[in-house]
Length: 58
Image 1: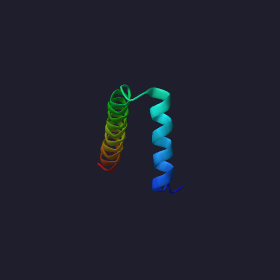
Image 2: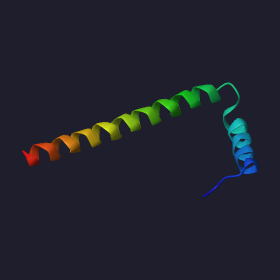
Image 3: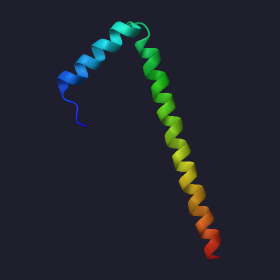
Image 4: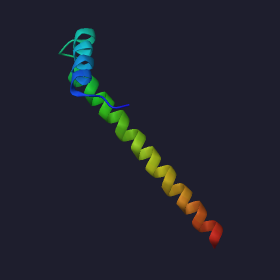
């Protein structure tokens, strides 16, 4: 699903109304931290899977 500029602007305005301008930076930091943790977990799982496959070959 592709979002155009207008759709993104409408979503942003709805978020502004719901949460207020003061809470948006806090929400953005929280979202960024969550994404970072998720990516780290995926990378660790991939590394663990690669290690397990390497041990099976030996």
